[in-house]
Image (cartoon, rainbow, N blue to C red):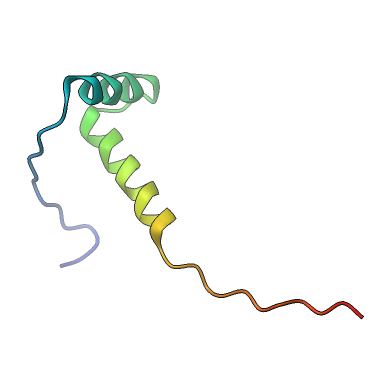
Length: 59
């Protein structure tokens, strides 16, 4: 599957989350589906393992 391939998913959410999703979508001039994709993409990037940083030695 390529990055541009799209799937259709169906989820059950609470009325509170649905209202928040609609509000955020409206604020960002997006559809609720587009807003949810954006939220998921940000979370996926946040959860990606970060490369280990090497200790810095100051002389």
